[in-house]
Length: 454
Image (tube, rainbow, N blue to C red; front, top):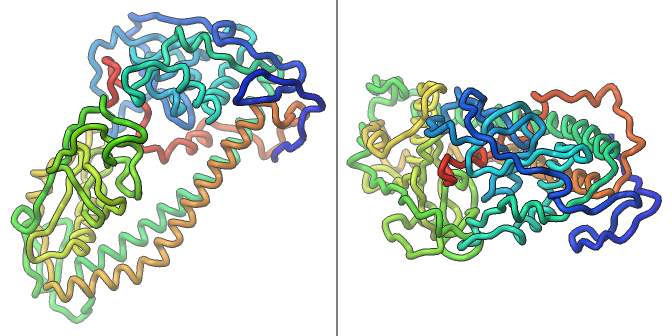
């Protein structure tokens, strides 16, 4: 399935990030490989977006997780099939790839057309290696590091590796076949995680609707998402029992990779750390701490206990802190059940958004504190092996991705020789297979027409 042999001979590259190259490979500036395409006025073409893992793709206009309202579409840039488009502010993260069809990209993108000696798919792989993305950072310019932009004038000065064109084509064919294998493994692991998550939700569902006493008499809860509940449980209104703190609309111009206050965004919901810091004054009402229950209010609504210490909560999220009658641990279980019901009701063709007012209007019956603690302990015990299995599967996906990164780097930089590779019967590649590589991304790396992130 893989190839491990090196090229027969190498030469010094002159590049610090890749010291040696196979004999016969060149190093040229991007301006020798690509031209700049700036074409507008094609409003009937489909909108393209970029995935950090799989490159440029046609935007799914039916997906309610993404904001689909776009103004001034006539200002969007045309990308011809095979052109490379990259997000000026996020190419350092891998926001780059070849256009699969003629389409439109945001004005915040740069579109480059490959010359005959450049296979855009090969360069898409090269540009998304960690080594090359570090070079992108060096060539990017801006006032704030996290908002640096890689303009065409800088991109064309960047040196790139240039294997002979037939070798570029062979490397692409080899990597696509390996990607297909890896994507199938990842999909199998993701399907397992989905089944395990459903099993976990069934455990939670039964505990918060029936309790632990099978002999308890039941009564109608008055809420469709709960059905019948134990007769002795009391109805609690979240608006009176829980303090709701909304996230704050922090200025993205002050986001920083390393300096400032940890900033929790929706993508950080189930993490123990944040991707960015807010390099400004701490906003007191947005402070959260370990153990706080936070809710993501866009896309698929989810809740989780924050585990990453003192941090700031970004907009499109809220924090729930019980004031009476209900413990945080039990509230986390009930909110998980409520959000699943709301998600199932929300049409996929609409933009899914939950407001703090929606949360305040939720009502649910709860037992006394002693029974709450018993239910929480029961759920923790029953879901512990499920959580361990989910963690193992997630770790295996992470290892697969690390393996893929190394495989790509070795192939596109000539550390392994794939010229003798021939596809076998199991090496068939479909776009549906490859799509699985990017399905667990928090969101596409998109920007709106003004060049600001959505």
